[in-house]
Amino acid sequence: MSYHGPFAGSTSMADFTSENVRLLLHRGVSFCDAVFVRNNSEILLSRRWLYSKHKFKSVLESLLKPFAGTLTEVVLLDEFADRLSGLRLGGSVAAVFPKGLEQVTSFLQTSPIHSESVILVEPLQDWSDTWMNESLELLKKHTIKRIAWQCFPPAAVLDKFKAEGFENFCIPEDGQYAFLHWRRNLLNASCSGPIHEMTEEVQTTLQQIECKASVKWLDEDFTLKDSTLNRYGLTSAWTHLMHLWAQKNKATSVDLFILDWDGCFKIGQPQATRWTPWGEVNCIHPLPEVSLLKQQPTQTLEKNVLGEWQWIGKSDQFEPGPVFLGRGLKPTLLDLVIEPELFTSQFEVKSIGVEKLNRQLSSQLGFKNIDELNVKKLVLKQRAIEQWSNEIFHMASTDEIYLLGPLVETVLPTLDAAGFKKIHAQNSLPDLHELGKNYL
Image 1 (cartoon, rainbow, N blue to C red):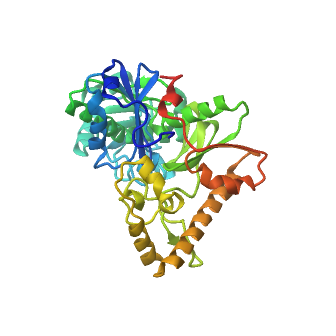
Image 2: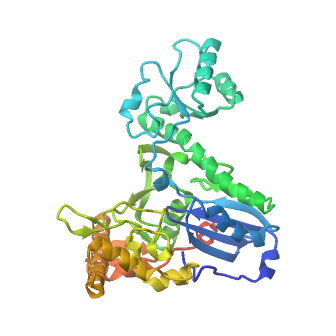
Image 3: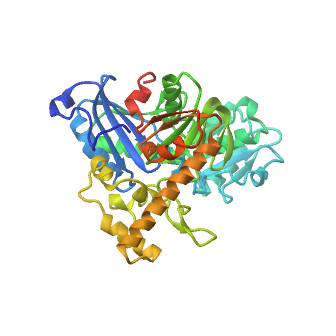
């Protein structure tokens, strides 16, 4: 974000006593962004910090306390695809399929539903009390909480299961026998638990400071809801807002690349379908296509097939994080690409672990001489910059691109020589208030 230090904007306590303060909160892949806005026009406080599921509540509470009496609403613009992408979701989800298609999950191997989850079959003739009672007994035995209806039960059946404490998820009328609709419905049901947990995480923090502010999700259609219904997209309204912001600020339609500490990706034109970590799904409203760059800021070093060190390791994301922020055990790409002084200017860290980073690199790479190690660090940094540049060059669909984010200055010199007709560049991201001012 375009912040200038851990706290930006006006920070005098007198400002915190005004009415109608709203918090815009974005939990990304590795970092959190919070912006407190008064009367939807003036930024009172902005903050970015490294996400930790163990420390999130305590950090949020410290930010919220000065606004406990004036905060009226918290708006969530969260991203959580990458946090969930390695999980096999749906342990508390049952699916009800039309007769003869109950084994369809074998064709949806990338669907989030567990193989051990309960699969029910739609009755051939009527939805009898016997079928419902036997199904209820089975679901309760397996502690199922949510049902993905891949068929069209009568309203009375849905009402009965709802009265028994189940959450119903239904396909649209045109979604019968459509795998993309079925997968979306399974994702809706499977992601319901994490969505509620993320909501409750904020609600609990508000309760601890006796703040009565409501918690709303900015859904992908830009409506405020108690719980986002478009879980299947697994990308927040933030991505859509970023796309619209870029379109508004550039008259021509250009490829938008986000090069942020939180992640590097391309935002393309709106599509009727969207890729998720579990496969493709339909979109109720066309949504911008999001394509991740293969190289991500929190990737770690690994040897390639030729025995050379490259940034091809697993992206550590928010746990544990960069060494420079005192969190990581393995050097990440950020540790070598970002100058240490930038961390101290942007985050509340007392010292930067340069010596710790050098020790870990020396151990990993086998260099004992500091001069040799510094040369290798420069080589690895340049290799990362070249890889980012190559990815952007090959992913671009036109010879005009738009680059946004704090990593832009690192990559720009290499891209300038790549033959693009025009490069629009900004080494920061618009803050949450600027993104949402026309929609909130």
